[in-house]
Image (cartoon, rainbow over all chains, first blue to last red; front, side, top):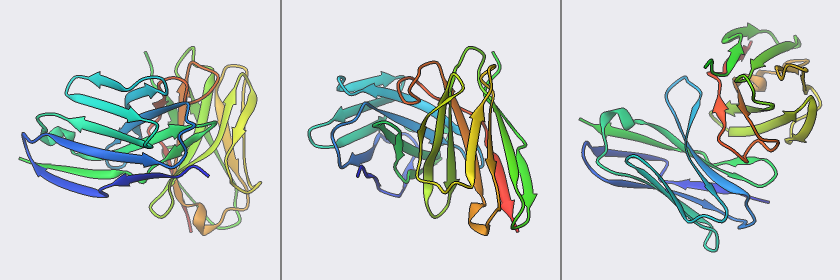
Amino acid sequence: KQEVTQIPAALSVPEGENLVLNCSFTDSAIYNLQWFRQDPGKGLTSLLLIQSSQREQTSGRLNASLDKSSGRSTLYIAASQPGDSATYLCAVIAGQLIWGAGTKLIIKP
Amino acid sequence: KAGVTQTPRYLIKTRGQQVTLSCSPISGHRSVSWYQQTPGQGLQFLFEYFSETQRNKGNFPGRFSGRQFSNSRSEMNVSTLELGDSALYLCASSTYREAGANVLTFGAGSRLTVL
């Protein structure tokens, strides 16, 4: 049974720092992996999608990597800003989306 | 281009009642998937529809059902509501047959409170 874990559950850093969020999964047979952000009381916004054949994807200050063999993905956020404060979720796709519990990120001005 | 529209945004029901939630996908998107989000269980997959056919279903009791219409709009229904059904219900649409094969666009959600 596929399980997705995100560590840490919460993270607070000063503005301007680079940071890494982690996502691990137990079964490497995935179709792809997606990272999302969720702002309080709102829906989800897709950030990056990595196909199983890819190693990384970049969008602006965000870079996501995927290592299927080790069951890990990381989301790197460069030069963090207060507007980056949100909960970040990863989801692996293997027939259906299996979600991590999320990392709540707070960027302090 | 209009986004994914979910209605109603908020609703309060009592135990034993039933509820119907609606999701209108982005124009041209034929895949709609539904998710339940609770503080205790996080996000869980409910079901996925493509071209009016249920493609996949999560591990939820039969009280949870859904359907998709020919215009790709989707509804989900929960019968005999229980307190534990209180949650944010999210739907997402995409262009591809499998919900995760392409970028998902989510609606703002329907927040259900069961008293």
